[in-house]
Length: 339
Image (cartoon, rainbow, N blue to C red; front, side, top):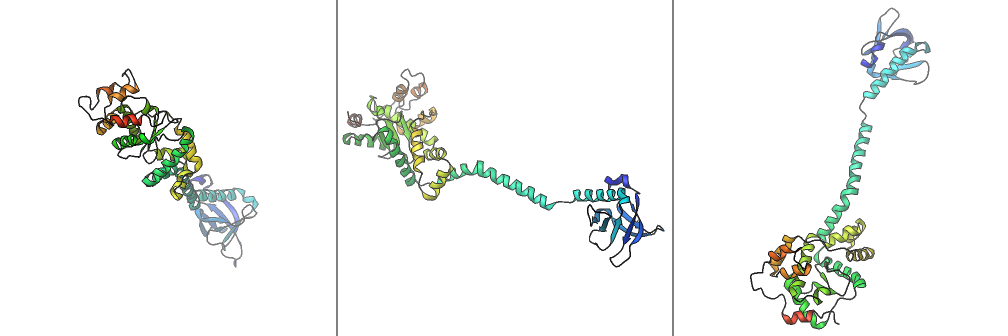
């Protein structure tokens, strides 16, 4: 008990009894290095108590009564005139108590630590993980349904899709040629700046992209640029990120999106500038689709300065590529929105 070096050899008078049936005896109490020695008046040792195992029966009261931990029948009384010895023994007890392991406190610390980790996971990791999981498990049919629901909200701003019956075949041919599906292109009279894409694969075109160009390769270039954006940015993921955790949970559990989330995202989409397209990925898309990149490059920048890479790397510049659309289909497609 190094904390009690100042009390080594401290002595005091007290009353001691070995059991409740015994008479109390006058004793001399002394503190040693690790034990409390109780001796009679002839200096004969009667008991040795470990300093680490002394308990007090009446904290704060007088006379102070102590007993060896586990044996409350054996007692030692110290009167008010032995305050120094009382202080020494109580100090021993405080030191011993402070050094004992505290499993309750440890459990509290462990519980607090685990709770903090779980709370952090819930706040920072769970929402993102849930959204990523939802994006992965939503089937293609449900994606297409969500895309159509978004289109319905966009139409409220843009107007009904252009759908002239004579031009519809040309639009289907262009969609089949570039996207592998005849029903993935939608021409709108307004709303979108140039192009946009929806869950399910549909690509929206502003009417100017079919009415103004002289060459269908220009329109094809805008469509291919949007497919590159589509691969880079999953529209369903964008929708869930915009809508938040509750919308993700609803989609995962009920298969539907809140009306407010669809409307808000549709409005947000129409205000976003086009995401820049990686030039290498775009050239590769032109190559795979068998479309010239030069007409699109000059449509984006008439000087060619900003799109020089697309001009110089045109995959079909030195070959006689087939037309993206027949002349008849292209002429009819340019009138898809009517007068």
